[in-house]
Structure formats: structure tokens, C-alpha cells
Length: 259
Length: 319
Image (tube, rainbow over all chains, first blue to last red; front, side, top):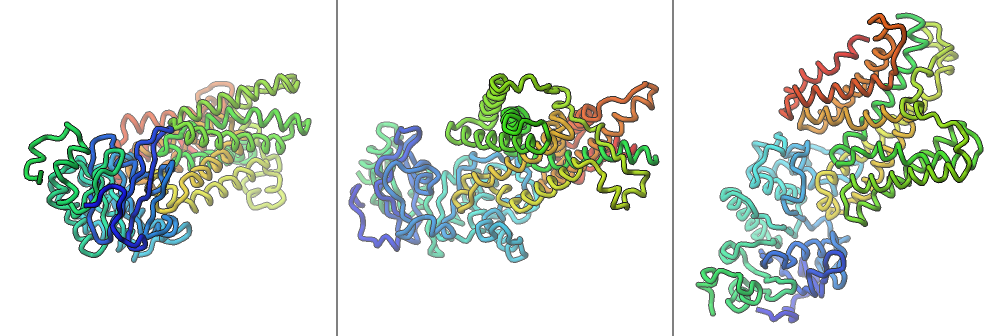
């Protein structure tokens, strides 16, 4: 693994997402301190850390939803503004009001808004893409249903479908498996792996160590600072986990990791 | 129904329907964005604009007053957005802070400028002057085809028609960005949309509709039509397009029904005089919402919502 501050020799232009000294917070109180990160293309990265570690803040600051107090986020070496078509964001499910008069297909179509622009008409090929995205997450049979009737796992899959419809190369997901039933979790993880296998890049904020060990390629340990970054087996050690979670981590979760 | 209806009832009825549609249309978006009280905010914050316009022009003629009101309304909605974003408070709080401050500023300006001596008719402001919209050039239904007579229509009808057209055009153009950013503002921002600008366009359209409608129908109808038809329609369907259509139907039904019931209802019952059309419209709206809440299909699919909606449109059927 790489020690914090030392970067692998990756050309920034090859890295879908790289952070350099990203510092951000709320009301003048920094939550995230000088985050450095280089995500290689075609990988599946989990961002792990305790509550309040700044995981969501990291995503929000990288995407410009929160103005960074210092540092920068690079998307393929450039500014997000030039790369927006290639970046899909899947916010936390709880961040929206699901009692909204939209159908499942309406939400998937929102992934195409950037392409459609102000005056573009929704044509059959747009609808086809939205429906293909819904098919991929197993929601096509429900496409015409109001979103108010969805379970938590289905809500999360609609969000993923909206990102898929966009056809992005980098997917940034905030807690995509939180409060999700086992079938939805399996479906979401399968889609994320397929995306990785297609050469796209997945970065997900996540909280369950077990899923990360089994299903992700790389891990970032975060507790206000980036404490470890690299392939799962190298980044997640008893030492780095101890440094990230302090005494709060179940010792059983540490069993099986190298000392 | 002959010449008398065309001269005395058709103009206020048309004005009321146009005003109700112009308000209900943006009201659908405001409802979903939890900004339904924006109409109330605008109604209060136009006062400083009216006073400044009066002081600058020295007259109470409608055009400068309307421009002053519109300017104040736009300042108010800009202020609401700024307070909401900078202060990180919910829209209701931002509106409460902005419109009370502007209304109070209007009161102070009124005292300082000496305009307080000018008669300010509170009843007019609340209830509008629908009944005063008469078409004296009309001789009967055939006047609708008579160009010379049509030019004699009350000017408010033309203003309201143009406002409705403008508001509808802006909202139609922005329908997808509004839909996407109302549902998920963060996602919209990441995809490069400008939710703040879209939101500002919505509130500006609302302010324009409200100011144009105030003069003809008064604040009560403006606030009622901004909130009640969309809220009732929301209870009848889970689809936005259906909600929009039902709300426009309800708004037109309440406006037409209210004008006629207010004008003729008491006479039918043997009472000697009419009652306020504006008041009747707002009361009908409240009844429609109560019926939708009590007996509506409670957000089952749209098809199930139709019978409830038809029942609510009853009053307009009496026209």
C-alpha cells in the first residue's frame, strides 16, 4: 500500500478521480482534512470509515456540491466542468423525497437530462436507454409505477438506473447498500462489478467491512484524513483499521486480517 | 343568459379563470418544492414597491403601481432564495423572514413618504375588483365576434391572458430541469444543470402571475389558486402530468363556478344581493381540497382519481 501523501506513479490524466489536499467542511468546521487520493481506472474502490469521518463530504466536495476550503479534485486530470458527461453521482437514498409524483421511468430519464438540454425532445432512443438501464437493475417491469410505492432496495436501484442511463465512465455512489435488502444488494453489486469489467470506474462510500473484503478491489480508509489507500488486501490491515476506527471496531472483524 | 350575462358576468368570469390558471400552473411546482406560501410572501412584499412607485410617479395609475409591485415581488423572491441558501433554513422560514421584513419596510415607507394620507383600500387589496370588470361595449354573445366591441373589453383581461401565456411558456420550457431539480437538486447540479437559476425563474414567473392577478382578483384568490388546486390534485394522483391537468381543471372550475355562484347564487336563494366573487372562488377551492382530502382516492393511480375530480367540478357545471 501507499503511505498517505505518497502517490503511485499514475498520470493524472489516466485517473478518473484524483484528490490533492482536498479540505472541506460545514460552517467553517473542516470535516475532511487534506485528502489525497488517486483512483486507477477500471477499478472498484470502497471508501470506508466511521460515522462522521467525512466520507460523504469527500464525495460532495469532489463534485463541487460543497465548496472545498483547500485542495482540488481532478477528473481525468481536468476540471469536473469539462467531464460532467462522464461522471455519474448516486446520492444517498434518503436525500430526496420519495413521495414525489414521478414514475420509475421518469427518474431513469433524468439521467439523460444533460444530453437532452433545454429544448431536446425525449425520443424513442432516449426512452430505450432509460428502459435498458431499468432492465439492468431488474426494475423494467415496474417502469410505469409511481416511485412512492418502492421499497428501500428498489429506490436504490432506481438511483443506480438513473446513473446507468447517463452512460458515464466514473460512478460515485454514496452508501449504495445502506438499508437495502439482500436481493437488491446482490443486484447492485453485480451491476457495479459489470461496470468495472467494462472498464468503468466505481467509487462507493460503504460501511460494511465484510462486503469490501469480498467484493471490492481497492479500499480507502478515511477518518477525516485518508489513512490508507490501495488494493483491499494491502490497505486493510489490523494496524490501519485500528488507526481508522480506534477501539470501536469489533475484534472479530479484524480476525483473518494479517497482523 | 343573454346580453346581461355577456356584459356583467362574462368579463369577471374570464378574468377569474385566466388568473386562476396563471396561479395554479406555477403552484404545482411550488407545492412540490415546499414553497407554496410564496404567494402569501409576494402579496405582503409588494407594499414597499407600491409606495415607492407612488412616491416616484405621484399617481395611483395602475401601470407604475404594477411595475413597482412586480419589482418588489422580484426583490422578495430573490431575498427568499438568498436567505434559504446562505442561511441554510427551510423555505418557509426564509419566506417568513423576507416578507414580514419587506411588508414592515413598506409600512415605514408609507409613513415617511406621507403616502399614508392616500386612501389604501384594504378590502380591494384582499378581494380585488372582479365585479367592476364590465364590458359596456357588448350587446350580446355576437359581440365576441365584433372587433370594435372586443377592443372595449376591460384591459385586465388582456394583461391576464398575456401573463398566462408567458408563465405557461417559461414553465413549459423549463419543465424537465424543474422536474429533475425539484426531485434531486444535488444530482441536477452534478449533471451541470443550474437548479438555482431554474428555481429563480420559477419564483419570478410566480411573482409575475401573482402581481398581474392581484389587481383583478385580489390577494385571497391569488393565494388560494396558487396552493389549493395543486394540493387537491396532488391528493388525487401520483403522476405529475395528471396532477397538472387536474389542478388546471379545478382552478378553472372554482373560478368560473365562484364567479357565477357569487353573482347569482344568493338571488337564486331569494337573497336581495350578490356576494363577493373572489370570496366564493376561494371558498369553493377550500371545499374542493376538503373533498379531495376526505373522499379522494388518496394517491392511488390517476384512473381512480377521475371520479373524485369530476365531483369536485360540480359547481362549474351549473354555468
